[in-house]
Length: 449
Image (cartoon, one colour):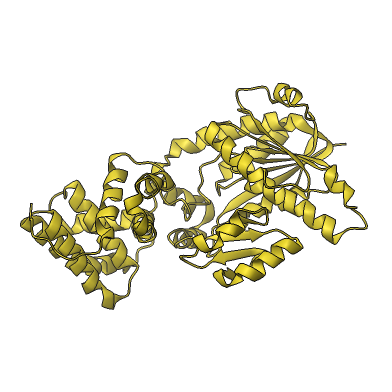
Protein backbone atom coordinates (compact mmCIF):
# COMPACT_ATOMS: atom_id res chain seq x y z
CA UNK A 1 0.00 0.00 0.00
CA UNK A 2 1.32 3.42 -0.93
CA UNK A 3 0.98 5.67 2.15
CA UNK A 4 1.79 8.89 0.29
CA UNK A 5 -1.21 11.23 0.46
CA UNK A 6 -2.24 13.14 -2.63
CA UNK A 7 -4.94 15.74 -3.14
CA UNK A 8 -7.84 14.04 -4.94
CA UNK A 9 -11.58 14.82 -4.95
CA UNK A 10 -13.27 13.22 -1.95
CA UNK A 11 -15.97 11.58 -4.06
CA UNK A 12 -13.53 9.07 -5.58
CA UNK A 13 -13.57 6.83 -2.52
CA UNK A 14 -17.36 6.93 -2.23
CA UNK A 15 -17.77 5.95 -5.90
CA UNK A 16 -15.31 3.07 -5.59
CA UNK A 17 -17.01 1.80 -2.41
CA UNK A 18 -20.36 1.86 -4.23
CA UNK A 19 -19.06 -0.08 -7.24
CA UNK A 20 -17.30 -2.66 -5.05
CA UNK A 21 -20.50 -3.12 -3.05
CA UNK A 22 -22.50 -3.57 -6.25
CA UNK A 23 -20.11 -6.27 -7.49
CA UNK A 24 -20.19 -8.14 -4.19
CA UNK A 25 -23.96 -8.17 -3.94
CA UNK A 26 -25.78 -6.96 -7.07
CA UNK A 27 -29.05 -5.27 -6.17
CA UNK A 28 -31.28 -2.60 -7.55
CA UNK A 29 -29.27 0.55 -8.11
CA UNK A 30 -31.52 2.70 -5.91
CA UNK A 31 -30.99 0.30 -3.01
CA UNK A 32 -27.22 0.50 -3.44
CA UNK A 33 -27.30 4.30 -3.58
CA UNK A 34 -29.53 4.47 -0.53
CA UNK A 35 -27.22 2.20 1.42
CA UNK A 36 -24.20 4.31 0.50
CA UNK A 37 -25.46 7.87 0.55
CA UNK A 38 -28.64 8.15 2.58
CA UNK A 39 -27.69 6.29 5.74
CA UNK A 40 -24.07 7.41 6.22
CA UNK A 41 -24.36 11.17 6.60
CA UNK A 42 -20.67 11.75 5.83
CA UNK A 43 -21.18 10.61 2.23
CA UNK A 44 -24.22 12.75 1.45
CA UNK A 45 -22.32 15.71 -0.05
CA UNK A 46 -21.08 13.46 -2.84
CA UNK A 47 -24.39 11.82 -3.68
CA UNK A 48 -25.06 13.67 -6.93
CA UNK A 49 -21.67 13.06 -8.56
CA UNK A 50 -21.49 9.51 -7.19
CA UNK A 51 -24.95 8.71 -8.47
CA UNK A 52 -24.07 10.08 -11.91
CA UNK A 53 -20.85 8.02 -12.17
CA UNK A 54 -22.49 4.88 -10.76
CA UNK A 55 -25.44 5.05 -13.15
CA UNK A 56 -23.13 5.86 -16.09
CA UNK A 57 -21.19 2.70 -15.28
CA UNK A 58 -24.41 0.69 -15.19
CA UNK A 59 -25.67 2.13 -18.48
CA UNK A 60 -22.36 1.30 -20.18
CA UNK A 61 -21.07 -1.64 -18.15
CA UNK A 62 -20.71 -4.16 -20.99
CA UNK A 63 -18.98 -1.55 -23.16
CA UNK A 64 -16.59 -0.51 -20.38
CA UNK A 65 -15.79 -4.09 -19.40
CA UNK A 66 -15.28 -5.12 -23.03
CA UNK A 67 -12.63 -2.42 -23.49
CA UNK A 68 -10.98 -3.16 -20.14
CA UNK A 69 -10.72 -6.86 -20.99
CA UNK A 70 -9.09 -5.97 -24.30
CA UNK A 71 -6.47 -3.86 -22.51
CA UNK A 72 -5.75 -6.20 -19.59
CA UNK A 73 -3.76 -9.39 -19.79
CA UNK A 74 -5.19 -10.50 -16.44
CA UNK A 75 -8.37 -9.84 -14.48
CA UNK A 76 -7.86 -6.80 -12.25
CA UNK A 77 -8.59 -7.00 -8.53
CA UNK A 78 -12.05 -5.78 -7.40
CA UNK A 79 -10.92 -2.34 -6.24
CA UNK A 80 -8.78 -1.86 -9.34
CA UNK A 81 -11.74 -2.83 -11.51
CA UNK A 82 -13.95 -0.32 -9.68
CA UNK A 83 -11.43 2.47 -10.25
CA UNK A 84 -11.13 1.62 -13.95
CA UNK A 85 -14.90 1.52 -14.38
CA UNK A 86 -15.44 4.81 -12.56
CA UNK A 87 -12.72 6.59 -14.54
CA UNK A 88 -14.06 5.10 -17.79
CA UNK A 89 -17.56 6.39 -16.95
CA UNK A 90 -16.19 9.92 -16.50
CA UNK A 91 -14.24 9.62 -19.76
CA UNK A 92 -17.36 8.44 -21.60
CA UNK A 93 -19.38 11.41 -20.41
CA UNK A 94 -16.74 14.14 -20.89
CA UNK A 95 -15.16 16.12 -23.71
CA UNK A 96 -11.90 14.80 -25.12
CA UNK A 97 -9.95 17.76 -23.73
CA UNK A 98 -10.98 16.83 -20.18
CA UNK A 99 -9.70 13.24 -20.42
CA UNK A 100 -6.12 13.95 -19.21
CA UNK A 101 -7.43 15.67 -16.07
CA UNK A 102 -9.85 12.81 -15.37
CA UNK A 103 -7.12 10.21 -15.81
CA UNK A 104 -4.72 12.20 -13.62
CA UNK A 105 -7.24 12.48 -10.77
CA UNK A 106 -8.06 8.75 -10.77
CA UNK A 107 -4.39 7.75 -10.98
CA UNK A 108 -3.66 10.05 -8.03
CA UNK A 109 -6.48 8.35 -6.11
CA UNK A 110 -5.05 4.93 -7.03
CA UNK A 111 -1.62 6.03 -5.73
CA UNK A 112 -3.18 6.84 -2.36
CA UNK A 113 -5.04 3.52 -2.12
CA UNK A 114 -3.06 0.86 -4.02
CA UNK A 115 0.48 -0.26 -4.63
CA UNK A 116 2.81 1.53 -7.02
CA UNK A 117 2.54 -1.27 -9.57
CA UNK A 118 -1.28 -1.27 -9.46
CA UNK A 119 -1.52 2.51 -9.83
CA UNK A 120 0.91 2.29 -12.76
CA UNK A 121 -1.27 -0.42 -14.30
CA UNK A 122 -4.36 1.80 -13.94
CA UNK A 123 -2.50 4.70 -15.54
CA UNK A 124 -1.50 2.55 -18.53
CA UNK A 125 -5.01 1.17 -19.06
CA UNK A 126 -6.76 4.53 -18.77
CA UNK A 127 -4.42 6.21 -21.26
CA UNK A 128 -5.29 3.55 -23.83
CA UNK A 129 -8.99 3.35 -22.94
CA UNK A 130 -10.44 6.00 -25.26
CA UNK A 131 -8.55 4.92 -28.42
CA UNK A 132 -9.67 1.32 -27.80
CA UNK A 133 -13.22 2.54 -27.21
CA UNK A 134 -13.22 4.44 -30.50
CA UNK A 135 -12.00 1.35 -32.37
CA UNK A 136 -14.88 -0.68 -30.98
CA UNK A 137 -17.43 2.01 -31.76
CA UNK A 138 -16.09 2.38 -35.29
CA UNK A 139 -16.81 -1.28 -36.06
CA UNK A 140 -19.10 -1.13 -39.13
CA UNK A 141 -20.69 -4.44 -38.22
CA UNK A 142 -24.29 -4.21 -37.05
CA UNK A 143 -24.40 -7.79 -35.77
CA UNK A 144 -25.98 -8.55 -32.41
CA UNK A 145 -22.65 -9.12 -30.64
CA UNK A 146 -21.30 -5.70 -31.65
CA UNK A 147 -24.56 -3.95 -30.72
CA UNK A 148 -24.55 -5.75 -27.37
CA UNK A 149 -21.04 -4.49 -26.58
CA UNK A 150 -21.37 -0.93 -27.89
CA UNK A 151 -24.78 -0.28 -26.28
CA UNK A 152 -24.30 -2.45 -23.18
CA UNK A 153 -27.31 -4.74 -23.44
CA UNK A 154 -27.27 -8.52 -22.89
CA UNK A 155 -26.69 -10.36 -26.15
CA UNK A 156 -29.83 -12.49 -25.81
CA UNK A 157 -31.98 -9.35 -25.44
CA UNK A 158 -30.43 -7.66 -28.48
CA UNK A 159 -31.01 -10.82 -30.54
CA UNK A 160 -34.60 -10.95 -29.33
CA UNK A 161 -35.29 -7.33 -30.28
CA UNK A 162 -33.67 -7.72 -33.69
CA UNK A 163 -36.02 -10.60 -34.37
CA UNK A 164 -39.08 -8.85 -32.96
CA UNK A 165 -38.59 -5.22 -34.02
CA UNK A 166 -35.97 -5.24 -36.78
CA UNK A 167 -32.56 -3.54 -36.96
CA UNK A 168 -33.65 0.12 -37.16
CA UNK A 169 -36.08 0.03 -34.21
CA UNK A 170 -33.65 -2.04 -32.12
CA UNK A 171 -30.85 0.46 -32.72
CA UNK A 172 -33.19 3.31 -31.74
CA UNK A 173 -34.13 1.53 -28.49
CA UNK A 174 -30.51 0.75 -27.64
CA UNK A 175 -29.36 4.35 -28.24
CA UNK A 176 -32.13 5.81 -26.10
CA UNK A 177 -31.58 3.32 -23.28
CA UNK A 178 -28.02 4.50 -22.61
CA UNK A 179 -28.99 8.16 -22.27
CA UNK A 180 -29.21 9.62 -18.76
CA UNK A 181 -32.84 9.74 -17.68
CA UNK A 182 -34.60 13.03 -17.00
CA UNK A 183 -36.37 13.87 -13.76
CA UNK A 184 -40.00 14.59 -14.65
CA UNK A 185 -42.63 16.26 -12.48
CA UNK A 186 -46.30 16.08 -13.45
CA UNK A 187 -48.54 19.02 -12.50
CA UNK A 188 -52.18 18.70 -11.47
CA UNK A 189 -54.78 20.55 -13.59
CA UNK A 190 -55.96 23.05 -10.97
CA UNK A 191 -55.34 26.69 -10.11
CA UNK A 192 -53.34 25.96 -6.94
CA UNK A 193 -50.91 23.87 -8.99
CA UNK A 194 -50.54 26.74 -11.47
CA UNK A 195 -49.76 29.14 -8.62
CA UNK A 196 -47.11 26.81 -7.23
CA UNK A 197 -45.58 26.46 -10.68
CA UNK A 198 -45.33 30.23 -11.01
CA UNK A 199 -43.36 30.22 -7.74
CA UNK A 200 -40.97 27.39 -8.60
CA UNK A 201 -41.00 27.42 -12.39
CA UNK A 202 -37.43 28.68 -12.62
CA UNK A 203 -36.26 25.24 -11.44
CA UNK A 204 -38.23 23.47 -14.17
CA UNK A 205 -37.99 23.17 -17.94
CA UNK A 206 -41.07 22.55 -20.06
CA UNK A 207 -41.26 19.24 -21.91
CA UNK A 208 -43.17 18.28 -25.05
CA UNK A 209 -45.75 16.53 -22.86
CA UNK A 210 -48.57 18.72 -21.43
CA UNK A 211 -48.27 19.27 -17.65
CA UNK A 212 -44.92 17.44 -17.48
CA UNK A 213 -41.83 19.42 -16.52
CA UNK A 214 -38.16 18.44 -16.43
CA UNK A 215 -36.39 19.29 -13.21
CA UNK A 216 -33.14 21.17 -13.75
CA UNK A 217 -30.15 19.19 -12.42
CA UNK A 218 -29.23 19.79 -8.80
CA UNK A 219 -32.55 21.32 -7.72
CA UNK A 220 -34.42 18.46 -6.00
CA UNK A 221 -34.14 20.18 -2.64
CA UNK A 222 -35.41 23.44 -4.13
CA UNK A 223 -38.71 21.86 -5.20
CA UNK A 224 -39.30 19.80 -2.05
CA UNK A 225 -42.38 21.89 -1.22
CA UNK A 226 -43.93 20.99 -4.57
CA UNK A 227 -43.48 17.27 -3.92
CA UNK A 228 -45.01 17.52 -0.45
CA UNK A 229 -48.33 18.63 -1.98
CA UNK A 230 -50.90 16.84 -4.11
CA UNK A 231 -50.22 19.22 -6.98
CA UNK A 232 -46.93 17.76 -8.27
CA UNK A 233 -45.73 14.19 -8.58
CA UNK A 234 -42.47 12.62 -9.82
CA UNK A 235 -43.61 10.66 -12.87
CA UNK A 236 -42.42 9.70 -16.35
CA UNK A 237 -44.72 10.72 -19.24
CA UNK A 238 -45.03 7.09 -20.35
CA UNK A 239 -46.98 6.24 -17.20
CA UNK A 240 -49.89 8.50 -18.19
CA UNK A 241 -50.92 6.50 -21.27
CA UNK A 242 -52.76 3.81 -19.30
CA UNK A 243 -54.76 6.18 -17.05
CA UNK A 244 -55.73 8.23 -20.12
CA UNK A 245 -56.92 5.11 -21.92
CA UNK A 246 -59.08 4.27 -18.90
CA UNK A 247 -60.81 7.64 -19.52
CA UNK A 248 -62.08 7.94 -15.93
CA UNK A 249 -65.15 10.05 -15.17
CA UNK A 250 -66.32 11.85 -12.03
CA UNK A 251 -68.93 9.99 -10.01
CA UNK A 252 -67.71 6.49 -10.88
CA UNK A 253 -65.66 3.80 -9.16
CA UNK A 254 -62.15 2.70 -10.16
CA UNK A 255 -59.89 -0.10 -9.06
CA UNK A 256 -56.12 0.31 -9.49
CA UNK A 257 -54.34 -3.03 -9.14
CA UNK A 258 -50.57 -3.34 -8.52
CA UNK A 259 -50.90 0.35 -7.66
CA UNK A 260 -47.76 1.17 -5.62
CA UNK A 261 -46.17 3.64 -5.43
CA UNK A 262 -49.39 5.38 -6.49
CA UNK A 263 -48.47 7.35 -9.60
CA UNK A 264 -51.23 5.91 -11.77
CA UNK A 265 -53.85 6.26 -9.02
CA UNK A 266 -52.79 9.90 -8.64
CA UNK A 267 -53.04 10.31 -12.41
CA UNK A 268 -56.56 8.83 -12.46
CA UNK A 269 -57.58 11.28 -9.72
CA UNK A 270 -56.11 14.25 -11.58
CA UNK A 271 -57.77 13.27 -14.86
CA UNK A 272 -61.11 13.16 -13.02
CA UNK A 273 -60.38 16.53 -11.41
CA UNK A 274 -59.48 18.01 -14.78
CA UNK A 275 -62.71 16.81 -16.34
CA UNK A 276 -64.70 18.33 -13.50
CA UNK A 277 -62.96 21.68 -13.97
CA UNK A 278 -63.24 21.71 -17.77
CA UNK A 279 -66.65 20.04 -18.18
CA UNK A 280 -68.50 21.57 -15.25
CA UNK A 281 -71.88 21.49 -16.98
CA UNK A 282 -71.60 17.72 -17.43
CA UNK A 283 -69.88 16.95 -14.15
CA UNK A 284 -71.02 19.16 -11.25
CA UNK A 285 -68.67 19.62 -8.29
CA UNK A 286 -70.60 17.17 -6.12
CA UNK A 287 -69.83 14.37 -8.58
CA UNK A 288 -66.24 14.43 -7.31
CA UNK A 289 -67.40 13.39 -3.84
CA UNK A 290 -69.16 10.39 -5.35
CA UNK A 291 -65.97 9.20 -7.04
CA UNK A 292 -64.02 6.32 -5.53
CA UNK A 293 -60.52 5.05 -6.33
CA UNK A 294 -59.41 1.85 -4.60
CA UNK A 295 -55.65 1.22 -4.87
CA UNK A 296 -54.40 -2.31 -4.27
CA UNK A 297 -50.91 -3.69 -3.68
CA UNK A 298 -49.07 -5.71 -1.03
CA UNK A 299 -45.93 -5.57 1.09
CA UNK A 300 -45.32 -3.24 4.01
CA UNK A 301 -42.90 -0.89 2.28
CA UNK A 302 -44.99 -0.62 -0.89
CA UNK A 303 -48.18 -0.03 1.09
CA UNK A 304 -46.55 2.69 3.20
CA UNK A 305 -45.52 4.56 0.03
CA UNK A 306 -48.93 4.01 -1.59
CA UNK A 307 -50.80 5.31 1.47
CA UNK A 308 -48.50 8.33 1.73
CA UNK A 309 -49.08 9.30 -1.90
CA UNK A 310 -52.82 8.68 -1.93
CA UNK A 311 -53.21 10.40 1.44
CA UNK A 312 -52.57 13.70 -0.36
CA UNK A 313 -55.70 13.32 -2.50
CA UNK A 314 -58.57 15.09 -0.72
CA UNK A 315 -61.04 16.00 -3.49
CA UNK A 316 -62.50 12.50 -3.97
CA UNK A 317 -62.86 9.29 -1.98
CA UNK A 318 -59.99 6.83 -2.02
CA UNK A 319 -58.87 3.71 -0.19
CA UNK A 320 -55.68 1.66 -0.09
CA UNK A 321 -56.05 -2.10 0.29
CA UNK A 322 -53.32 -4.67 0.83
CA UNK A 323 -53.75 -7.90 -1.13
CA UNK A 324 -51.58 -10.38 -3.03
CA UNK A 325 -53.64 -10.76 -6.19
CA UNK A 326 -52.28 -14.23 -6.89
CA UNK A 327 -52.62 -15.76 -3.46
CA UNK A 328 -55.41 -13.92 -1.62
CA UNK A 329 -59.13 -13.50 -2.23
CA UNK A 330 -59.52 -9.80 -2.99
CA UNK A 331 -63.32 -10.04 -2.81
CA UNK A 332 -63.20 -10.95 0.87
CA UNK A 333 -60.80 -8.10 1.65
CA UNK A 334 -62.98 -5.58 -0.20
CA UNK A 335 -66.01 -6.76 1.78
CA UNK A 336 -64.05 -6.43 5.03
CA UNK A 337 -63.22 -2.83 4.13
CA UNK A 338 -66.86 -2.17 3.12
CA UNK A 339 -65.79 -1.42 -0.45
CA UNK A 340 -67.53 -2.35 -3.73
CA UNK A 341 -66.85 -5.68 -5.42
CA UNK A 342 -67.53 -4.44 -8.96
CA UNK A 343 -66.05 -1.28 -10.53
CA UNK A 344 -66.73 0.95 -13.53
CA UNK A 345 -63.08 0.83 -14.53
CA UNK A 346 -59.97 -1.16 -13.64
CA UNK A 347 -56.34 -0.32 -14.25
CA UNK A 348 -53.96 -3.27 -14.02
CA UNK A 349 -50.34 -2.18 -14.31
CA UNK A 350 -48.91 -5.67 -14.10
CA UNK A 351 -45.45 -6.60 -12.75
CA UNK A 352 -43.16 -7.15 -15.74
CA UNK A 353 -39.62 -7.48 -17.09
CA UNK A 354 -39.13 -3.66 -17.16
CA UNK A 355 -37.67 -3.72 -20.69
CA UNK A 356 -39.37 -0.40 -21.45
CA UNK A 357 -37.65 1.40 -18.56
CA UNK A 358 -34.04 0.22 -18.86
CA UNK A 359 -32.93 3.81 -19.36
CA UNK A 360 -34.28 4.69 -15.92
CA UNK A 361 -33.36 1.33 -14.34
CA UNK A 362 -30.11 0.39 -16.11
CA UNK A 363 -29.26 -2.34 -13.60
CA UNK A 364 -32.42 -4.29 -14.51
CA UNK A 365 -30.98 -5.47 -17.84
CA UNK A 366 -28.18 -7.35 -16.05
CA UNK A 367 -30.58 -9.10 -13.66
CA UNK A 368 -32.94 -10.15 -16.44
CA UNK A 369 -32.68 -13.63 -17.98
CA UNK A 370 -34.59 -15.11 -20.96
CA UNK A 371 -36.61 -17.43 -18.72
CA UNK A 372 -37.83 -14.43 -16.70
CA UNK A 373 -40.08 -13.37 -19.59
CA UNK A 374 -42.03 -16.62 -19.41
CA UNK A 375 -42.28 -16.30 -15.62
CA UNK A 376 -43.61 -12.76 -15.98
CA UNK A 377 -46.09 -13.80 -18.67
CA UNK A 378 -47.54 -16.56 -16.46
CA UNK A 379 -47.95 -14.16 -13.56
CA UNK A 380 -49.49 -11.48 -15.78
CA UNK A 381 -52.02 -13.92 -17.23
CA UNK A 382 -53.05 -15.03 -13.74
CA UNK A 383 -53.48 -11.49 -12.45
CA UNK A 384 -55.42 -10.36 -15.54
CA UNK A 385 -57.78 -13.32 -15.21
CA UNK A 386 -58.43 -12.45 -11.55
CA UNK A 387 -58.78 -8.73 -12.24
CA UNK A 388 -61.50 -9.25 -14.86
CA UNK A 389 -63.86 -10.56 -12.19
CA UNK A 390 -64.15 -7.13 -10.57
CA UNK A 391 -65.36 -5.22 -13.64
CA UNK A 392 -68.97 -4.17 -14.14
CA UNK A 393 -70.68 -5.01 -17.44
CA UNK A 394 -69.94 -2.19 -19.89
CA UNK A 395 -66.82 -1.22 -17.95
CA UNK A 396 -63.22 -0.86 -19.15
CA UNK A 397 -60.16 -2.75 -17.99
CA UNK A 398 -56.80 -1.29 -19.02
CA UNK A 399 -53.99 -3.85 -18.93
CA UNK A 400 -50.57 -2.19 -18.98
CA UNK A 401 -46.89 -2.94 -18.41
CA UNK A 402 -43.60 -1.05 -18.61
CA UNK A 403 -42.34 -3.80 -20.92
CA UNK A 404 -42.07 -3.64 -24.71
CA UNK A 405 -42.16 -7.44 -25.15
CA UNK A 406 -45.04 -8.88 -27.16
CA UNK A 407 -45.12 -11.96 -24.92
CA UNK A 408 -45.99 -9.70 -21.96
CA UNK A 409 -48.45 -7.51 -23.81
CA UNK A 410 -50.19 -8.48 -27.06
CA UNK A 411 -49.91 -12.22 -26.44
CA UNK A 412 -51.31 -11.93 -22.90
CA UNK A 413 -54.30 -9.98 -24.21
CA UNK A 414 -54.86 -12.33 -27.15
CA UNK A 415 -54.86 -15.40 -24.89
CA UNK A 416 -57.20 -13.70 -22.43
CA UNK A 417 -59.71 -12.84 -25.17
CA UNK A 418 -59.71 -16.42 -26.45
CA UNK A 419 -61.06 -17.52 -23.07
CA UNK A 420 -63.33 -14.55 -22.35
CA UNK A 421 -65.84 -13.96 -25.13
CA UNK A 422 -67.57 -11.37 -22.92
CA UNK A 423 -64.60 -9.03 -23.43
CA UNK A 424 -63.43 -7.22 -26.55
CA UNK A 425 -60.29 -5.26 -27.40
CA UNK A 426 -60.94 -1.54 -27.97
CA UNK A 427 -57.39 -0.27 -28.39
CA UNK A 428 -53.79 -1.30 -27.90
CA UNK A 429 -50.62 0.83 -27.92
CA UNK A 430 -46.90 0.26 -27.44
CA UNK A 431 -44.64 3.22 -26.69
CA UNK A 432 -40.94 2.65 -27.29
CA UNK A 433 -38.25 4.40 -25.24
CA UNK A 434 -37.44 7.85 -26.61
CA UNK A 435 -35.24 10.79 -25.65
CA UNK A 436 -37.91 12.11 -23.29
CA UNK A 437 -39.96 9.09 -22.28
CA UNK A 438 -39.73 5.50 -21.10
CA UNK A 439 -41.36 2.65 -22.99
CA UNK A 440 -44.73 1.12 -22.09
CA UNK A 441 -47.66 -0.85 -23.46
CA UNK A 442 -51.38 -0.71 -22.73
CA UNK A 443 -54.55 -2.39 -23.97
CA UNK A 444 -58.18 -1.39 -23.37
CA UNK A 445 -60.50 -4.34 -22.76
CA UNK A 446 -64.25 -3.67 -22.60
CA UNK A 447 -66.73 -6.00 -20.91
CA UNK A 448 -69.95 -6.54 -22.79
CA UNK A 449 -73.05 -4.92 -21.25
